[in-house]
Image (cartoon, rainbow, N blue to C red; front, side):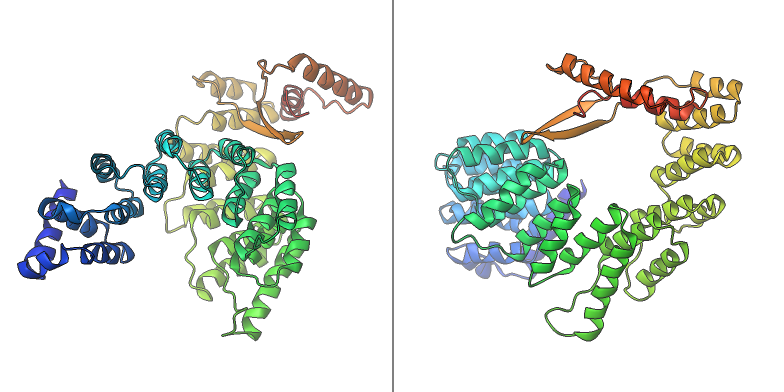
Length: 478
């Protein structure tokens, strides 16, 4: 109802008061019609573009060409207009423009924005003369919908089909490698960038390579690329800061941030002038958390708001909670969460609950669990953590009470491992892998080595005992 009324308002403002009828008739003639649609697209006026296109279709359908359709498809993609996008796709079919390749590419992006990757793939399959752009659009569609493994498979298919990827395709493929931890494939792409004559390695590709190496655990390789990269933007710096922080190299991360600020102060106004963004500060706060630097973390958190005008998101608040929890300041973490101006999410309370379990603080843990019951009452892991906390203190009756109220099993976590350039997914206790017998034999051998080395945890320590059992049932880690 709101969408209809807003369109009526746009119609009235666009075609009644602001534009006389004679001017409207003039705009509806080619090429001015396409120029008007392009103007609406560039100004992010998707609704106006759609209303104008409908008026154009009603009064002068002969003026509608593939470019008119292209501009309106892009407008629908900009604003994620699902109903209007599907209607426009039907119109494109009706007028016979569906085989136009740049329209097909835009339709792939449109359905990807809707979350309908299957439809994006069907449109891709209908493309008669595929090129690198439509391949890249399909790969991007899968990545944007958190399907990195499928995206990488399509990239391989593209290479097998003798299509040469450009720097944009390689950048997108490297994002898949980073998400999956597919180091071997990422290294092959990196080698290809040097081997391919005429390929321009731009800053986006450099950043993608650095990000891939960071997320695959190769921080030294990422640092080498960072050093040889002539031009650096905020993404380049942030990738390295976050990378060092994730690998526990807190001093290196904060040193990198200090270098970034030095460039800012000495080269203000020059091309090398770089301002940190909110993700940069996520890396800085993570570094402080992993390094146990509570005072520094507080200072950076304050500086983010006062010196850079960046309002903290939930992720920054979560980093601060983690900072307090790692330092054992559980009460301060509780007060911080309770005093935030925004509604804290379940993850922030869950970080504190885990810290209460590690430090054996049952009283605070019970209070935190009550908060989680209000936010996410169906999450089984919270009750498991609380029951382990009771077991660690020998409160078996309380442990059984918590366990008895668990009605469903926890959804098993899924991990992946790259073997021979293939990414395999696995879960704990998996019995469906074709090599399960060999995998379990290797695990049994490793467990025998652990037992002979007297490294079996005391079974009375419930949390450690559960950990060793879970390790034993990870079936595809090799």
